[in-house]
Amino acid sequence: MTNQKNTSILIILINMNHLKLIAIFVFTIFSISINAEVINDNEIARLLVELDEVIDEGDKYQHIRALQADSLVKLAARRKGSERINLYKEAYAIHSRLQCDSAVNTLRRLSSVPEADSDDNLRHYLAISNGEIMGIMGLYNDAEQSLKNINSASLSHENRLFYYQTLRSVYGWMADFAHETPSYGKYVTLTNTFRDSIIATETDKIAHDIALADKLIVNNEPDEAIKLLLDNLADSQHEERIYLYFNLAEAYRILGDTKSQTYYLLLTSISDLRSGVTEYLALPTLAN
Image (cartoon, rainbow, N blue to C red; front, side, top):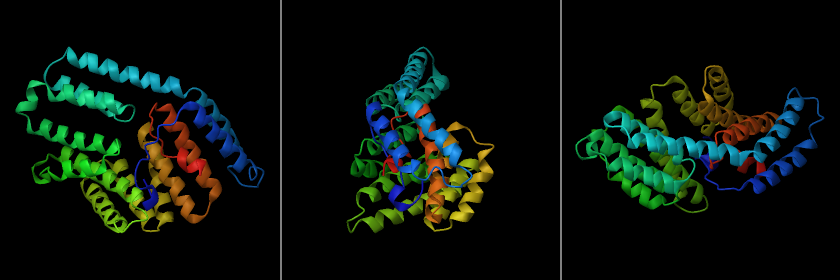
């Protein structure tokens, strides 16, 4: 999550043949400079080949993730109490990045558990999730209105963070689509406001530093962002690493270091595809 034009996750449903074309396009553009005397040249060439191979297997990764989510839903149906709730939440987290219809169905299942009538935390989670999935589906005004109806003061720490993250994403998407309109500045301001709320609320070090690096990049402080991001790479998990890579690519873009930008965009793309998601942080940037 980075500069204002890329303030949110880009949701682009692209079939594998189109991804293949993107990889060929990227290879053509950057093969011109592969022979330059830069430390990452050989690694970039290797990653371009790896990206091409991963694109060929993209359907496999998505199928695996879909099976994982479906298995969680089936298991949740046989459990009770907090275990069932957590299984549905885990399934929703996968479905929301894979298939919106399945994510909506998972939320409906979760809303039908007995605890949904009495558990405020669960009700708040469902309300925020409904706003999130509307945003992912491109229903930005509906998502905004749904989220604005939530009393943030009544949220638990976990739900408040989720609330801030969702609003930051929704306003980021709205800013992207309002780029040439008078509303653009308003949505950028709201995106920045909720990013600051995330930074103030997030207790996980890596997640906090990803949000802080995002802010540094927006504020044109790429060197500080790069240092912060690189310091977290060794201790990061797969999903965290995707955002670290993408922010590094954006920081190097600001510095004009095209080779390093390409390197981290390729790492982001490969990691995205291997996650089996249908939302891609870096592929659209590589294609451009």
